[in-house]
Image (cartoon, rainbow, N blue to C red):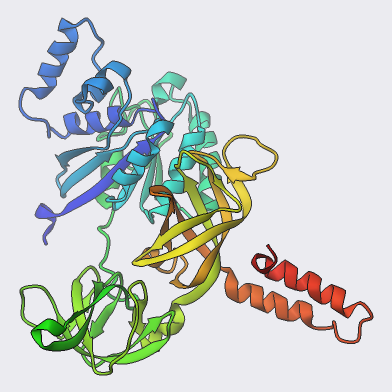
Length: 453
């Protein structure tokens, strides 16, 4: 695909009223992407109705949005630069529409996060940073907007830049650039602003053009969650067909594969895709059905990996994770949830809330709607996982409360192995103690609390 036809998905996000829609509207106008006469038509409509024209009106097409002045749904907008085409996803910033924002951002390869220079880093600015981390969006541009309202003050820009950089570091998100802008006045959007001579970096459009399209991860380790196992015995076809979509890497006919967590091993005999000739290999993003040389029985939800790479995918019953909760009922203790990870479905329980992003409650005995936290989750059975930073598809999950998808998260660390190692070290030295039984019971209760509920 050459640059003239290259297309990239970018999400625009940030706290409500920080200027996301205005920034996108300005991009559309300044790149001459709008249909002929559209800009003037919107201006005439504003004049007719006695309203002050805003570039955001170019995007906010829903009647409720026009009345309330907030973006409710994730609007998709197309525009072109000299380098390529863009699909801009204008995601809602209001706290009540985080679910919409999460849905919109899930399709993005890069992000522009907008912060108001007057208001500074808001609570939702942090939530959206966490969401971008959760979705694995590593290409991030932070636009500090409304610099005109603070007289283009460099110190205001630097203060916000330092504060938000420190926060993003805790999420392992490193923005590619911070840009001081005035979206309403068109400063540093497509052309440099003479009002900010102290800023010598690139414009928003230049940085967008510098973003790279996501690679296909062909060099990553192979992983394919098994969606289902099919047999067509009624048609005298005794093959077991292991179906799924490759989330990373590549596999060839003849390769030895291992299924996790069962650890069963076999060799790939055939690779079949729908309505096409058999294949000798498949790679990231491709859906296929595989037959094996050996007859083995596994269930859907297991993860197929190359046997030589099986150590790169872990099996766990306990993880540390970042979670954002969107359910009407809080995420609490002493309750079982359904965790969906890849094709796996496993019961999970909240064991501990380690840190918290939300109000200033001194104790966090639950996560309430729109709150985020770092938590420890326990699984009912061993499940194949990966750290999100090693493999996003095996490290990203959804939590279901009843029949509602109520939260999402990313796995930071497998605690099963760590707990066993700590347990081993702790049990050493107990032998010979007078209170051996008491100390042994205390350690068992510490490291295996679910057994003593």
